[in-house]
Image 1 (cartoon, rainbow, N blue to C red):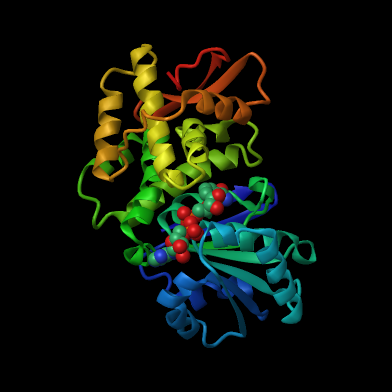
Image 2: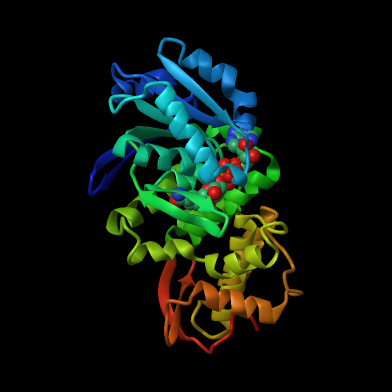
Length: 345
Ligand SMILES: NC(=O)c1ccc[n+]([C@@H]2O[C@H](COP(=O)([O-])OP(=O)(O)OC[C@H]3O[C@@H](n4cnc5c(N)ncnc54)[C@H](O)[C@@H]3O)[C@@H](O)[C@H]2O)c1
């Protein structure tokens, strides 16, 4: 399956196919041309797929850089390391960078590509479910600062994205389920048929599921590439999810787990308020349980949560805008008075 994303600076293709990794050289050839390739990956992905990758790219002139895995790698120091290695390898604007890994490698290598020599081509080959359905689409690239996540970044579309669902088979269950939270989110906000599919047996449906998620994100980012409007619906469950992640210093819940808690919480509340069709929260909760995304978060510190929430939304004056679902597949953005603490209560 192939999708084309139209951006202000041009268009790029996303290829979603089982076995696309084995055909990598062929898939990237139109982008790389006669130039050289600079691959950035992490040590876990390299341990699992490095030999196969070198084998698939054996006919090309390739420079490899393997970084440690984990969020800590999305840092200025690793960014600086990539710049130095690019320079030492004499990479020029006719060469291409390829990010082979999860969202950490994609965001970091994408930002390096966006800025090195004022921008060189890059190709994304995402290897986690989260990166296949979310971070590799939409052109947001970034690194973290000690002061906060994603504080330095850019909008820089890739030249091509190649997604092979087969690569997901080696993911630890918790990392897979982390991505499932975003998959469930797409179903909840825009695609009821996807949501229904997730309620059944998905074992041989990953390609179709990824395709539907990418299609959903593609349509939203094409309408709002620079995140000034509609793109906000992608944040369904994220406001309270961020609060949970931050309250426990990113140690207790993964990002997806935070989003799952956020989606459950806001939908239960909006259903009680009569803003969401009755039965929706129950359906969402049953699906979250199926993918081990069900948590009892009730023991959190309410004062600290309130502070974190208002810090997160400090730009808004009298009201806070939340993404809610009126029913499965239909998200809307709705303002709530700032003093309304319904998410915390
Ligand atoms: N740019 C965007 O639009 C966007 C959107 C969402 C998230 N993000 C960013 O994505 C990052 C999180 O991405 P992530 O969840 O992919 O994390 P990650 O890149 O850290 O990957 C998670 C773990 O899985 C391992 N791994 C990767 N592929 C594997 C495979 N096929 N088999 C086994 N193990 C594998 C990695 O080595 C890592 O240890 C965060 O930094 C977040 O800010 C960006």
